[in-house]
Length: 223
Image 1 (cartoon, rainbow, N blue to C red):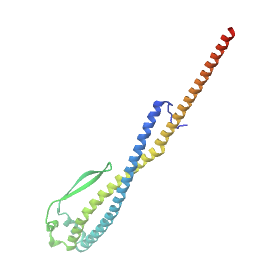
Image 2: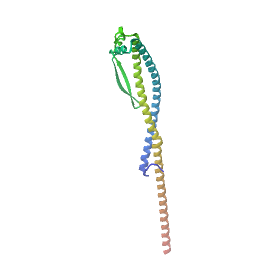
Image 3: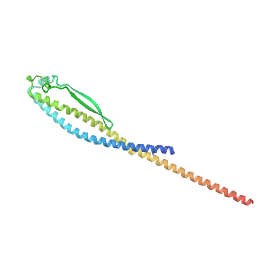
Image 4: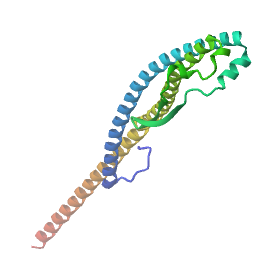
């Protein structure tokens, strides 16, 4: 018997059949979406790993150069030198659509300046190691921004994959089986009703025939 309460009527049977068709179509679409999300997610994971290794290596190298600069100039002198205004950069956050998932896209714009203008502090009181450290930091900054974009995209896509997976499982293991059981239950009930109706009709027919035969015998006996 079906686990859902349904009225065994032909109208309800038609509704369940339409629901089953819709559920199967939705199940297929969601499975295709899940598979495509997984494919793109795995590609992003590879990019994320490569970017993370590059950023970590760049940050490690930058820190090493700043340590050298502090060892030569002193920490206070380095901090004072870094207070000088450097290159101005703006980051514009946009959204792009990946399989109905809105993910961020960072667009970094920097003002056009000469390489020598990157170092706004005075060269007379600073070490060359500070120049190397600032240059190294500027080179790794764009990779850090790209890494943040990719990691946030991976996070959002992983969340969407999990939601899609739950919906696929709900359709596959709950909605579709229950709808199929409802259809079988109603079909069985309608068949039982039809057989019962046929049996009743046959009994009525037999009764009418017996009555007709009885009347004929009665008329024959009177003659």
